[in-house]
Length: 539
Figure 1 (cartoon, rainbow, N blue to C red):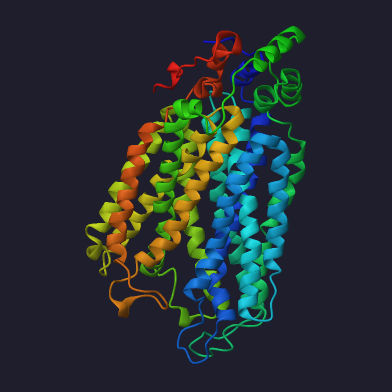
Figure 2 (tube, rainbow, N blue to C red):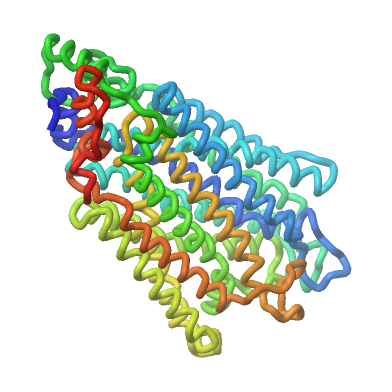
């Protein structure tokens, strides 16, 4: 192996300290806010339909037209995809810390603005809401590559996977908090402004004050982001960025000494390291050298994340069947607007508590024991098995008396997504690429995932419609049905399973060993430009 760098060795060998946990909380609160903001809209879309699309001649409460519903729910995903690419690139150009504050302030401003959406017509309100949610998503997108990269570059190599996974696991608490806040707001408004059910009084079932309820729920997401802004600004630039990209080993050491009790490095060693770093050959993202070293790795991380998110975000197709099966969601016409918001929030809170959070934390506890590769491969395998278990006897599961089995199969699918590729696809891209391209490559991988989320959320929403026009949801054309959609989703999991073999195992290895940066020195200008694929990447 090439010359050892004391600054980076100290980071790899550092004991787990209080600052590691502080970094998890500071970075994790960004993901907490991300999850809250992205998923809270689903808690209030039914209420938006009742308020802005009420039809007095209809026997059913108002609902958002399919195109409006897709826009309101999906525009933040589009913003997130753009933000992942832009801020991922910017994080490598300007540094992680400088960009980290930008994304948080953008999230705070747009979160508040979403709740203040205005307009004299329903179309105007929805257009304003979509505008601000796009830019909210843009800020959220930046948090993906930056949080993962910052945590990976701070952590030691023994517990790095658990710390990055813990940042991502904060999503589960964001989902849970979104449901709890919506329950509290809807309960408070319901107690203060009681109203009859829709079937008894279509007009009176939606009180004017309900227009404030959804706005408060959306605006609440700004609070946790604001609380962590100060701490984000206090975080020093990561030592790996300063040493390997900015090539300032002396500043990297002083920054690290501020927050971690690590080994001291002499001035002579710092100067020697800076000279060594200056001599390194560097290659760009679109170079032949990158394609040779990391091309297959980037293909593996992008395809796996894309396929995972198609399957993961399509799972909301079954939620209405599950809610009805276990009587979590009564028929809409039997409730008033605030009661419906309460019921939806309660159901999604139970899903977050029972299905989402456990899988995330299983990953945190086991990722540095059994490794990323095994967790991702096993996750895709079990997701395939359980989706086929839902699809093959689908008519059996949907007949009365068999709903309990359907719920169990659905829960296991969700569990193995989170104790599987939903976590590992976030962790691995932050570990296996060079420091100067790490944030960019994570942004590309996560953007591929978000494009899969758009396909899963909206493509399959149309595809899963019944092929009988009489049985489709209002406003939707006939599709291929839920059963055939499940077979297609199982196929997506199989593709993810196969492409996992392109991604190296990163457990217990330093970032420089994984990315091949230790070997770059061997091809410094004094020794010509003959570089070989590092042997440690062969697995």
